[in-house]
Length: 299
Length: 299
Image (cartoon, rainbow over all chains, first blue to last red; front, side, top):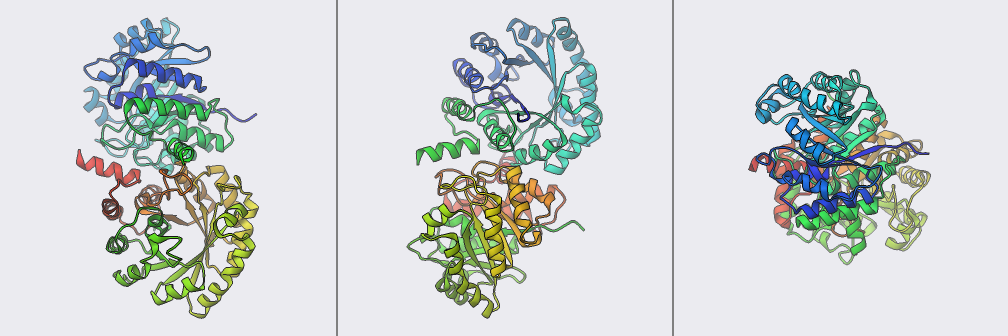
């Protein structure tokens, strides 16, 4: 039996919120395609103000339209109580909240300090507990911030520990702008794992500077076993338009299978899921594995 | 003092031989741009039959046209004695020969066994020794072959040892089709390093499946300190047209600098060199670092 790595597929949410709009039907198809490929955790949508994230305005319809598979978790991002209630109404299986490791990022993006942002999550966590829903916590800018530059590993550890203490069952460590490199990623993860058990941590790395797989590969020996990724590398980088965003699920799965890990995912079906949403977006997949396989079979 | 990693820039040769043709002037500009960026080893051209590699037919003119910088090695690929003599006439500083770790690849590409191919290099190595030129050896298909599939690490070690014993001062281990993953890369390197001293080995990884940086990052702790790469990720994959080829020098240098290694290369100038040749090719760089930096500065 090979060791299992949990893949958290964020393409329908973190991916599509940074792409041009696609139809609700295309989103539903994507979520269903991912589940059929064996992906058992799909961040399906986000309940935030459509003023801020118009691409996610139809998340309720997406949740209503999908064909739910048993054993698959369909999660939603819910920054506040209003969002949480909408996620409950949509029958999301889990919710997620989003903190920053960088004061500059927190101030510029949500106009409050990190500490204040964490306080705002208290009612969401309380409501989730009341309703028996698990809450996943994101920490952004763990390897660098577009405003503050380098972020100290201890600062990341402090925010991650807070989210964990507040009740998040898992904390996902996001290199939001994709600037990290392997040693920095290892040092950050080690600092966080000194405060939060490794099995409660996930890596959420963006590929803006092409480093995501190298960073993941370098962190696996430390014991992390949950990886966030987006099929077809969906999602750009809002701080460098035209650059890559999330690490592509196909590339992560290819690497993990090559290293002998089990993900439960059928890579060929995952590639098919990515091709279909990219066809709906009118763009090529940003997955090297997908491009190589498409090229190989078209020669 | 941070530790030095030697970057062997293969863009003008391994890169451009797999791209559409560019002018001789554009090639000369690329080599000069690379030297100005601090690259001190540039595989500048190839002396092979223009019937087989028409893109390299003007290598003599490229060598004649470049502005040689002191401290920079301008190398040439020379598969046979005729090529070696042309490289001598062009005043190449070093030459390289090219073997395969895969019998299937050797048979399909040069119509002879690996052992026969090695014999053919004997006169080149003798002539190089007579003329005081160093010879670099390449081994292709070290992590997989388009015909034979998986390649045993011991088979790679056998070919690498042969090249080293025949007089190659360095052996470059090529994942020609870019299919390798981190553990396989480590096992292959360990097997080779049991036969050839680690300081005589280089990694030459292609990014076809997006794994090149992860593989390099995973092999650095084993002690390898020479990396082949191509600016802008020049060079496609002849076995999957449209897929990525060589790992991009910009991405390698960014990672290495982030890990505290010294390369002697100015990343901004390297990006500029890649942008210029890509402009001449009419394509975007296949370097995530280059794309991210271009996007950041155009926002």
